[in-house]
Image 1 (cartoon, one colour):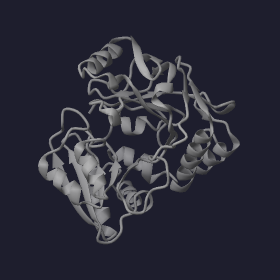
Image 2 (image 1 turned 30 degrees about the vertical axis):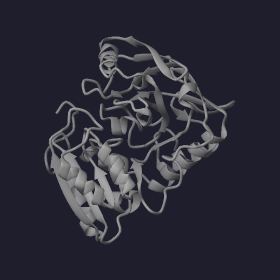
Image 3 (image 1 turned 90 degrees about the vertical axis):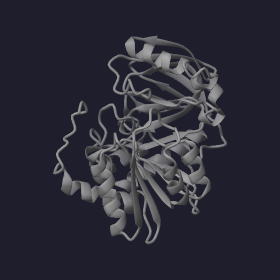
Image 4 (image 1 turned 45 degrees about the vertical axis):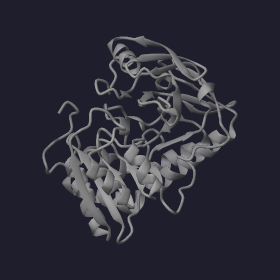
Amino acid sequence: MNLGVESLPEYLHIELIAAALKLVTDFRPVQPRQQVLITADTSSDLRVARAVAGAVQAVGGIPTLVCYPTLPQPMQAPPAPVSGAAAAADIWFDFTVSYQLYSPTYQTALKRGCIYVCLTGMDVDMLVRTVGRVPYEPLRAMAEWLYRHSQAAEFVRVTSPAGTDLTMQVDKAGDPFWEPLPTHGGYPQMLGGQSGFMAYRESYNGMLVFDGALWPPAELGLLRSPVRLRIVDGYIKEIEGGHEATLYTRWLAQANNPYVYLMEHACYGFNPGVTRPSGRILEDERVFGCMQFGVGATPLGSPLHSDGVALNASVWLDDLQIEENGRYIHPDLIEFCRAMGAPGYR
């Protein structure tokens, strides 16, 4: 219980019901008779998984709740019965801490037309703050604006007070993660409050400093000291910092695969329910005003993938600055922030 989240069953139990219902109606609508898989591992908050199962039942879906032992690392294949259930599901809400995103089971489920909803490690507090109390429409509209305007740029530059100064070239092919969702299923969906763009992996150059959170490996999470990455042509060439940087260096090295050092993605964080990092990567990636970066090119065969957070970001799309020290400054973005009730924009 080092996260400081109340464990009593009555904690936010009324708000939890409302948030679970909002999840299956506004965020990922469940239709009557749809087969819905809900997975949790032994590190998950089962209050959330049970509440979502009840909400699915309430809207006419058919929920199946499965819990299994926590795997050593994310992206590993779960027990065989879970793989079979995922392949037959229309929608899959994944609350496991060792998430299934990018795993063989995930890939098979998507090919079968499943919608995979990654909500790794979500607990009662997080569900209420990031879903239950957040207006979804302006959140969705802001994600769309950021993606479209970023894709229209040639280059994106990100800096931060901690020392980040990173430039990347936009790939005009676009990113399927942020394109309009297909009607037939077969795609992943992430928690609201994040957007991104497609950049050429080999175009990342400069210094990237994670000063909010970094996970996995399991030994990390909420950072106590910055982890500094020197990136040349998309690859991490040097890692500097204290004990946490050493842990990260050793974790990457044990894979013995060059693609674990290759940058994979860059994302904006803007969920108004997340004002500071907590060590839970799902919400840390959405700290309001942060930039989040994925390391480890899984599509090219990297066996590892980690996500890190740079706080108080400043962002330029070519010569247009849209964010300054964690505050969105473009007039359109300011209006979205006000509509969401984000702190500091009223």
